Length: 164
Image 1 (spheres, rainbow, N blue to C red):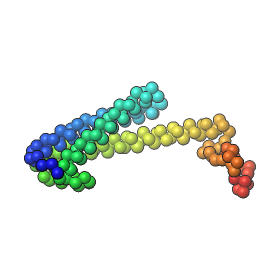
Image 2: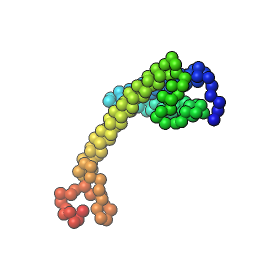
Image 3: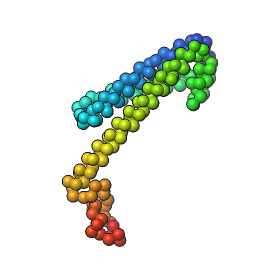
């Protein structure tokens, strides 16, 4: 284990990392909001432009969180759900870490909600696309099944259960 810095030095280092995390999390949130607008308007050009930036912010956020976790572990604070509260009890006398951490968790929660919403929009659009494709192919939507000889079949209304 690396020697612990003073509580004041540790506080400064963690506050700096959390500030960088917050900056990336806010940028990621903006990307997710832009992605949602593009999904709602079905603007594929905008989506193609947004995704690389979104991935970049998520990647940087992951690296920063790994740095934070590694520092905490080097200072003797085990990884896990109590890591930050243990660290704060040791070195956060002015509440600076607690404030940044709470703000980061709020932004992360909003980002997670946005990501779930975007995923739901994508799944719904995919379902609509697959339904339309099934109609064009002349099969019942959602019936991507195969007969006993490997042929595609979606029409159960004309076959007995034993034939299926």
